[in-house]
Image (cartoon, rainbow, N blue to C red; front, side, top):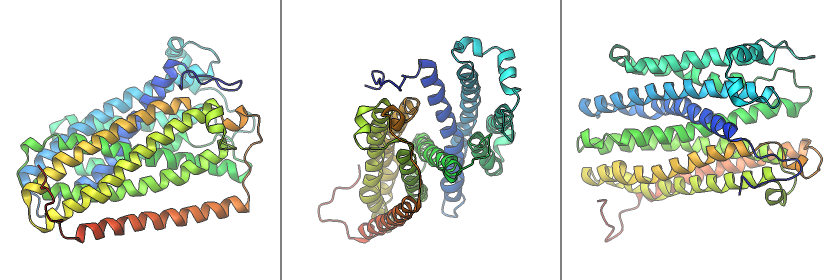
Length: 390
């Protein structure tokens, strides 16, 4: 359906564009998402006094290996994303020709456009320097001597990994309108929250693969990890929703444009995939997390182990698949449904900001209520005949 999406103003992206952009966001998910999740959810749980040293050691080794490979993927994906930018700037330049070092150098050294405060190529040079430094730092975790300093390296790599995408969002020309300032802000919020959400899920699925080397008491450790990541994921859902609504309003002028324009069709597919992710997250929050908490209070180590290391990862695997599908769709969301439909550009005013503020408050209340309902379900006694986790 996406490949067939055609209107007068919409062009289906070439396959190299799909692969490079999807690969780039996979790289960001691996670097940003895994580092944030390790720092915010895994590291604190491993440092808890109740965590068995053997379990902590197994998860640290797997985390270090995963972060190392995340660095490799980021480095490769970053290179091909740079080549894709050169090809796009070349107006019809074949992707293979864009790999020539001379063409890349010309692209990065191009002078600033008229009225720009900085050359676009200079921004990309800075971004790629930070990208290489971040990737090298993560790849260094393959060295046993470096791996012993995993916690400190992850904390140091966190701001660098975030800077990889934030630098790319810097406008080369000073925005003349408020909307022009807000567009890159909401775009970067959308990217960061999305890759943290997806990258974190992928990291935890990978770590759950070591369950055969963990003790029976590891269920308590993993209950803490899932609890901490649930909070991270909830914040990401909120930010993705608010920033996504802004981006959608900017590029879609009417509901009908979701199925009458190429941009809208691609966006609609993405929306359904994200709703699938949210549904899976709701299942975790309202069914699995309360059962995990009840098993923890009952000191039922067997049920706790099965819930946290068998049932939970199965659901998360489904979320990862949906998340990767979202990344595949992203390259098709190009241009604007408003321009395809011949409509006027979106212009913000006081009523738009008031509606946005109301949505933020409503979403905040909704997420707070979600957490409270989940806690209430966890405090309920187990239903008579409720099957144990197996």
